[in-house]
Length: 392
Image (cartoon, rainbow, N blue to C red; front, side, top):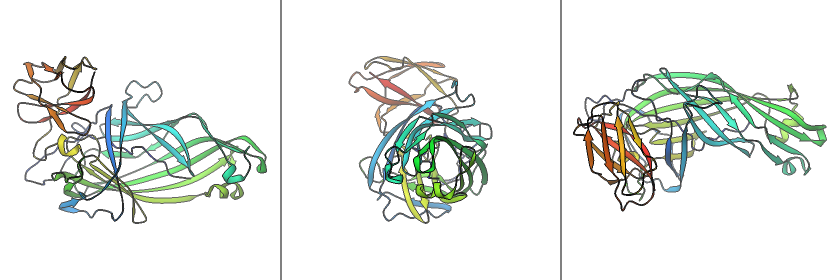
């Protein structure tokens, strides 16, 4: 079975750090690592030529500042806490399900609890393809059926608590419903089910600092991170009309019963960012994807602790020159705010009128319409997780 591709693959984390000295280890806990349920993610894909898998260890420096930009992408992560489809869902990520080159639009759902952050299932849109290039018959078809698939088992994208040298494992079974019409086999809209047994092991193999390209391709400042190695394996099986698919049918698609695949993923995690600073997919020693987030250099400070407070803002959207009302779940006297663009660049330090747990923020009249983030800093210098706002 072909690989499942997440666009972006994405794992969403808010982290808190316990720093004792420069470059100290990061500790993730359930109380302070819950990601935002919905937000806009800006990711950059880098060219992978010459890249190799990172080496772990304590107090390392990983320099990727010379990686050239391939293309950027913006993805809307949706808040699914009230989802009527997946009642345990926390957030949803749009993506693609791929089988031997056939792509279907999908939404991948995640959940969060005191033990970790993990994938729970996917929603697939019905999509049909002709099989002319495979069977030679233009009337033969391959179809993804519109389906809500709940995973059996659990693989944590992040487990709580976690720090350097920690390890954990997980496994799940994923099912997909398809339809196949192949005249040579007497199949007309025959029901097909694919089953993938999927397993992962996670190891926190290093900590230190990573350097990435900024939007203008200049090097970022060093960013404090944990390095996590994820070893993945899968076993695929295929069934037609409730029976094991014969080799004569699977072979033209380039698959076989019990087909196994393995790869590795390396992620660099940092405080204050809801997704990895860098994500690298490695197959047979070759780096397939290099995904990074330049805004990590602006949204976090390697020496600043994060606050556990949360912001609630209104109205949203807000007009240029308008007033944004901000409510906090703790006192905010003597705190400050800053406006960031989608790339994490600070563009304004707006005036703030404090009133205990509430304050108002004046949006600059000259600010271009678009999507921004409001980042708060409390009186003790701790960062409060940013909130997405739309300026009209």
